[in-house]
Length: 257
Image 1 (cartoon, rainbow, N blue to C red):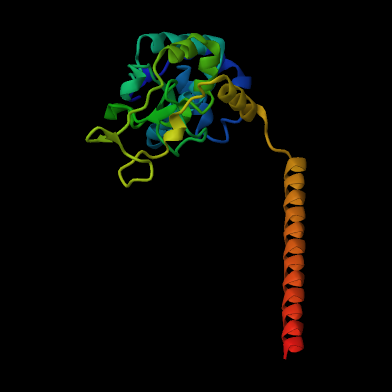
Image 2: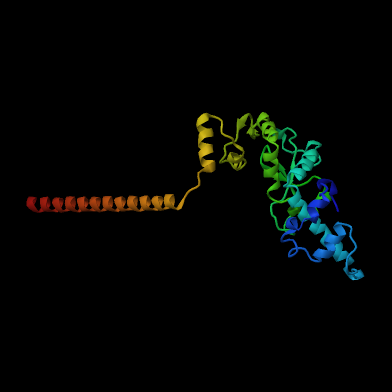
């Protein structure tokens, strides 16, 4: 398998447990034959020569999907932690991340959609692998949950991120910073901003866990309707006042005449 150094060796006991293979038989063709290839077992029925390449490809797919489940377990996380410590996945190319180690991640859990990406815990962004040998690895072989589980397992990674600067590069022209509205100004700068003061941290904490409910939306809709009603009433009062004033002026003109 290309880019095999991104993978860890899955324990045979994990593969032999049918519970860990739930749902994979409907995704992987030649499931039983592919499983025998992985476990190095003799198939009950000999594989036809025409189907050997298909079975080998199915074995790669099956092992990758099993690997995505294995690295979510404690033994799998420890094995990936050793690779992370040895910087097997590379460092973040962003200058202000100061060589933060990357983690392999997939944006989809379904195979065949997108290849593997590399996630930086410091800037919270994803990058393509620097070598083309890793561009054929399916992102589903690592899944969407691995990076979050890995950082929960090893909280020292977050401490490493806190020690690094949160500074962002600002483009300048003759010593003056470019305005955000300028054609060459920064774009989406707020995505990399972090709360600094106590008020900003408290507001971020509230926004992180507070999700809008249906009642809030209903209240917002009711408030909006009430405000619209008040505006309509104000407009009607203004129109009535204007009509009375114009009527008074016409009466005064008649009296003068």
